Length: 214
Image (cartoon, rainbow, N blue to C red; front, side, top):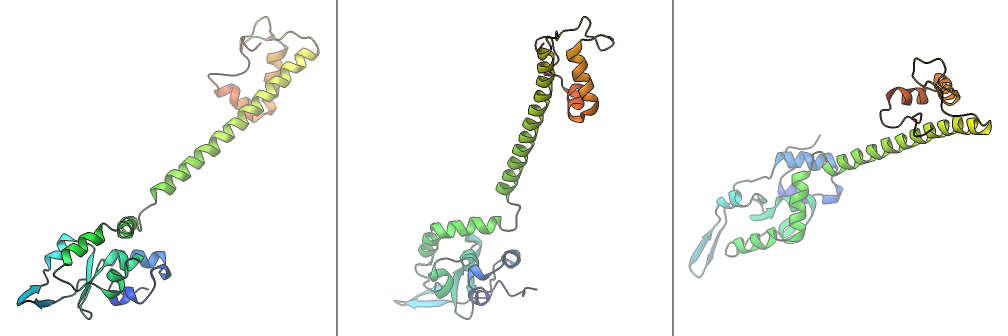
C-alpha cells in the first residue's frame, strides 16, 4: 500500500523516477501535486518580492517544499527531469515567471506532461494495434479458407477433365435429379466437408459452380 504522502517533494525525491512501479506512478498522479503553505520573501535593493499563490492556478505543474522553501515541477519530480526543478528547487522570485516559462517549453518537461496526462488511461495505440492484428489474423484465416475451397473445386474439375466428362449438366437447378457430374461431385464432397458446405450455403458472390466457371 502506498503512502498518502507519496506526492510530497521529499517523498518524490527519495526514489529515482525509474524505480517506481506503474501502479505507484498512477497512485501519485491521482493524489495530485502537494501544495503546502509556502512563505518566501526576498529583499533586494530595498524592494521586497513575495511569493504569489496564484502561480499554482496559472501553472498546474508547480508544487513546493515548505522545508526547502522552494518550488518544484510535479511531472518532472514524478517522471524525471531538470535537476533545478527536481532536486535543487527554484527560489528566485524575481525571475520566477521567466524560469517557469522556460521550463514549460523544455522538451523533457513537455514529454513528462503528456505522459502524466495519459498515465493510467487505456493505451489507444495498443488498442488500435491489437485491433489491426486481429483484423490481419481474420483476413489470413479467410484467405486460407478460400484457398482450401478453391482447391476442392479444382480437384472436382480435374476429375471431370481426366475422364473427359462434361462439366455442364442438362438441368442444373437444385431440384433437378441430373445436375451433371461436376455439380454432383461438389455436392457429394460438401456432405462430408463442413467448410465446403458452409461456403456453398452462404456464398453470394463466388461459389465455383457457376456457368462461367464451368
